[in-house]
Picture 1: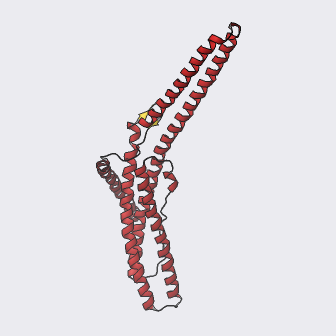
Picture 2 (picture 1 turned 90 degrees about the horizontal axis):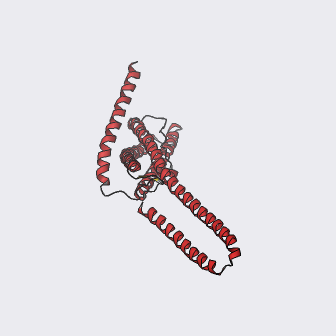
Picture 3 (picture 1 turned 60 degrees about the vertical axis):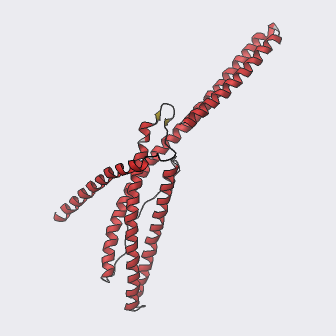
Amino acid sequence: MMNVFNKIFTLFFWVSFIFIILLVAIIISFDVIPESNKDIVQSGIIAFFGAFFAFIFVKIAEWTTIIRKGNINHFNSLIKIERLLNRITDRLEENILVFGKNLDALKSMKLLAWSSHEIPFDNELADDLKNIDFINDYFSFSLDIEAMKNDFMTMKSMYEEVKNLFVNKKISPKTYKDSISFCINKMELIIRFMKAYQENAIQLLAKTRILQKEKEKNWTFLFGAFPKKHYVKNFDEKIKKELKVLNKEIDEIRRKSKEEKNKIKSG
């Protein structure tokens, strides 16, 4: 925020400086202008300064609007990212369950119809962010999700190919069993990755909530709330506190979801 006020001070300094120079020049010129032309010159000067200051204030208003809009877009992006991370956490939860069932089926040498839930992601949400540390965390997480989605596709393609070869009796049962053993190892690895990424998503979710609170503390009349460009010194402590609240909320959602599923089964 100090950078913004420094820019404002610099702008008004140069405006005032130019104004003083022009004023001195006008005073000097009035001494050499004939009396009959002074009214014309005075009108011209008033018109000039009116247009000059109108231009300056328009530029200040445009600059203020741009800064305010940028600040608003930053906090709006955090809200969108929070919603996205909630969906990612849910999808990872679902995929962990699905892959667990698929893993049991593969270990029993059963044929299965491969399925997984799509993991959503949107890199463009980071375009309006101003916190460099969070941008780096978000970008790193996006790379992990992208790599995992590629693993999903590779795993599915590999299994479908082996299954079709076995069904069409183009490979021996032993070759099929060896290939399935490889699939099992790969799937176990992917499940571990999903659990790790789920924890990362929850931690990133906690960070979005903490950064959103800056909107309440750093609000200004002209520019709205100014986001920090880096994490504050005690950010790790804030994450720990926010994670406790967040994990309680997630546990409560899981409990309610389990109760609803049990009601459906019993009904």
